[in-house]
Image 1 (cartoon, helix red, strand yellow):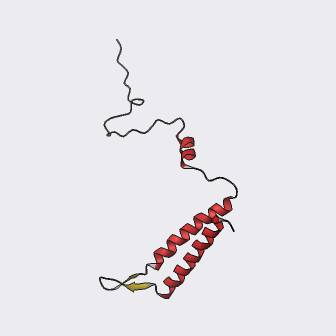
Image 2: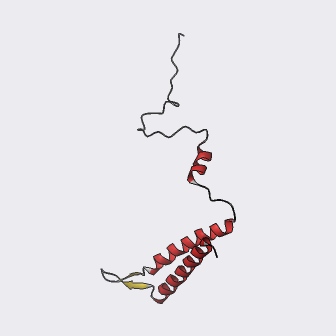
Length: 103
């Protein structure tokens, strides 16, 4: 079993345990009175999301994960760089006004 499979199995086990705890006591007493959702619900949701990510890693096979730099490089080709300015100002590439010539 490799590291990815180990992490996946660990996340699945955590999600199952949290779900069992939530089913046993879905509501707990609130500090302000009344009842609220058990904190085990959040643990179950988060562990399930982690398990889904590890499962995608397992099913992806031997494809190397895309790095953020590779994704941005492909998306940003040919686009104007972003500018941090107010709405009344425009970037230099887009804000040209033709001079009126003699009529």
